[in-house]
Image 1 (tube, rainbow, N blue to C red):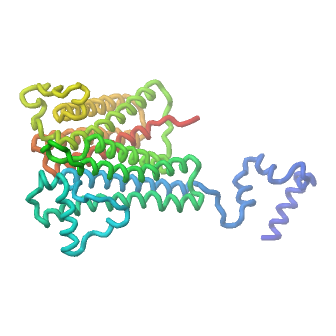
Image 2 (image 1 turned 90 degrees about the vertical axis):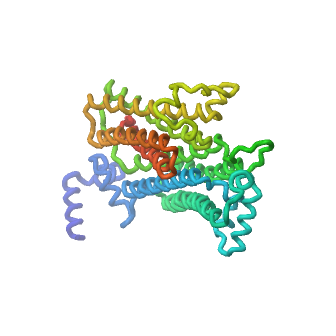
Image 3 (image 1 turned 135 degrees about the horizontal axis):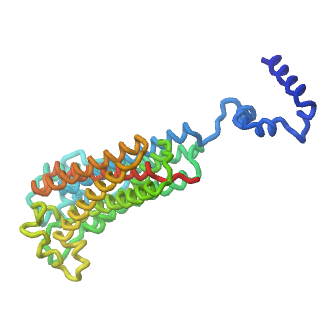
Length: 402
């Protein structure tokens, strides 16, 4: 190997002259000018070293982001089931460390049950609840809280490791800092939401429930966290599509963004439906009772309150948004049929069309069957699937920087 290297060097000297070794024309610059920069990197770098971040590390970080987004899905679904089973107010204290250990003896369970009995939900709704029934709702809320802590660890611990290894680019570092901060904020927002259902409301005998505003904020921040994580993961894992920037492509891209935003708002409006139990007021479709527009649509004053506090208006809005989402996705699919697109993009838009109709069917069935818990939970999960596909399509159609 040594002899062959010297022979190659003599050949280069013979071809380019003695100036090959002079400072005015160093060999690394010559190689770089011939487009052999990768060769220079290999020669100048220590054996076994590799620059980071690179394609391999990007794939690892991208997979981590996908896992994080999957964990957020689990938290949203579990939170929805907790809400549907009316379990969210069973744990009346919040402590990051102490509450991780559940009660283990009968005395500990009775002490926990006695705490719950001091709050409105027991006094008004569950005054005849047994200890075993309390254990069920307590374990539901406990599972949701522990899953939330697992979500936080899934974000923060790998972030520290990848940051230390130098696997994160500058732009990804900024995203990771924002995502980890949003995870911590989400946990605090969850407790702030629960507190609203534990407060005594004088001269009120209504069923105790959390504030629909705080519930919407809690769900909205979770959806933002999910979308940002999924987008980052897709950006690191999927090679970009090269689509011509024609007028048709630009129109489709804008319409896809608008449709994605509509799907997001529709999912968020579901928080107001859940918070007010609005799915129980008119269990008919397509009319609400005997009318297309119910009489009590604007019963509250001022009128703006109806959109956030009137169960009839909240359900009406959710219906309209759902129908609008189905219509928008159908138009989007029709527009795409006139264009030549990569196979991956075609799969995304076809999947979006199939799921939006399935989601509409689930929503109507949930309403007509008076909101059974399994069907309602499936409908809530379907909203995440639909949002994921809309985000994937927007990502497929994104315009690449020049």
